Image (tube, rainbow, N blue to C red; front, side):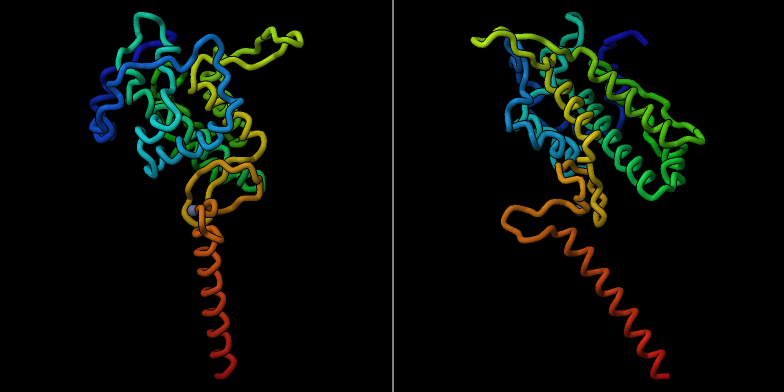
Length: 267
Ligand SMILES: [Zn+2]
C-alpha cells in the first residue's frame, strides 16, 4: 500500500455507491480554494454542527450535497500528490469513505463508553469480532478496505487502538504553527483541509464524551452535554421527540404491568 494512492475504480462498481453517483451537478463543479495561506476554520462558529451533519449523511438523514453546500469540500486535492489531483472537486466515493470512517469512529466511541459504564464488554467484543465494517475506510487521501476485526480478550483496549489508528491516519499533516501579530507571536493549529478539521473535532469530542447514541432511535450524533440520551429537541418544540416517545412507552409498560398485578390480586 503506497501513501496517497488515488481512488480505485472498483469502488464505483459497488452497488451501494451507485445511488450516490446520481446526485448531480455539485461534484462536477471546479474545486475552489478553501484555504489561502493558513486554514484555521475552527475559530468560526459555523463549524459547530459539522459532525452531526456528517453523521446524518452516514445515517441517510442528510444528502452529501447538503453537507457540501453548507460546509464546502472536504479537500481531496489538498491531501493527494499533484498527479492524483482531481479536477471535479472531492470524488464522491472518497467523500463517502470519510463519512463512514467518521461514523465507525463515532459508534465505536459510544460502544466503548457503554462497555465502561455497564462494566460489560461482551457486546463490544462481539462487535469487534463480527460486525465492525471492513471498509472502505478513508485514510487521508486514500480509500482502502481494512480488516479491523479482532477476537481480542481486551475489547476496550482493542477498540481504543482502532480509534487511535483511524484518527492518527486522518490527522497526519495537521500542525502547530506560529503567526506574527501586532502583539508578538501567536500560536494556532493549521490544517490542510476540512477533513482534518473534522477528525480534529472528533478527537476532541471523544475525550469530552460529546458523542452520543439515542436510546430511542439509535441515531449517533454530537452534543456537548455529556448526559444527553436522546436526539436533540427540534427548534420550536418543547422536548425531544425521541425522549417523549421513550418515556411514553415506558409509562405504558408500567401501566400494563400494574393492571395485570391488580387483576391478579382480584382473583
Ligand atoms: Zn432519536
